[in-house]
Image (cartoon, rainbow, N blue to C red; front, side, top):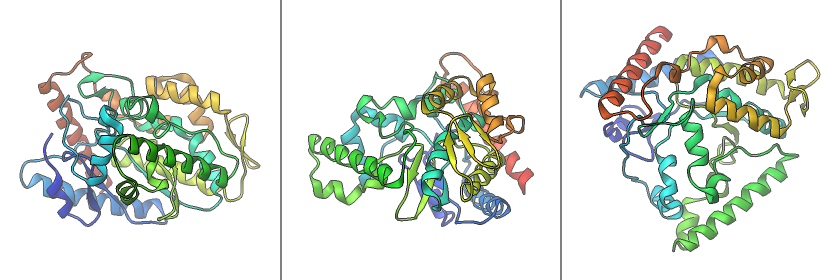
Length: 335
């Protein structure tokens, strides 16, 4: 892995991330999948070209394959290091795909996106985290569960909600708890308030955003652009249907009168299977098909990454280069 901070100068839609080896690639709000494809391809091709000018490659993986890590640069990140302690490692070493949907029938949107959590299996990118084979989707496992019990509630999937006020009450409660943890770490309220607000204190797979009024879905890994576009198209169609169709807990399915989602305990079992075994788990495939996904259209990168329980640096480098090749080939096909 290498420093990518200077790549933020390559395009105004690129931002720095927690550590030097990662960058965030954004797209502007769009109204259709063709528009999203066009802008995503344009940004990625620009950044890949800038990286290639001095021998670097972009790698579309959600976790580092080797044990290397990087230093946190931002003031917010340094505060998180003090609050989380060793629990910050998974947060700063994982990358994912974030999709924002315009807020409309918000309670329905929150509950639907919660129920779509097992779809992360469709774009899982790597079974390895920092050199160790963890699960089919190593990113989801470590990001949600390896920060310690005190912080799992800030990263794991939340239960369905009854209304927006109830969801916002949860956010406010987590914010106050995080502020108390910050005080324990010697961070005064002024410094905490400068870098943390209720909506950005939680990093759960589904978030309610106020500054950019959206419902944000954060479950998927970083993945090949074509696979992300396929996923987003199905999810966007389902979200749009919530304008006219209620989301109800019960038998899963997408009928004309309702969108059925499983009881939360069943959903958790499906997500656990999706993280551990991916779309190879029959229950996961059946559920995703019921929710309008076609697993046959997906080729998760994690399926192409094989190796021993622990990777050496040379193997990790080869696998990263293979993933970089796959990214460039995928973009060429889209373009």
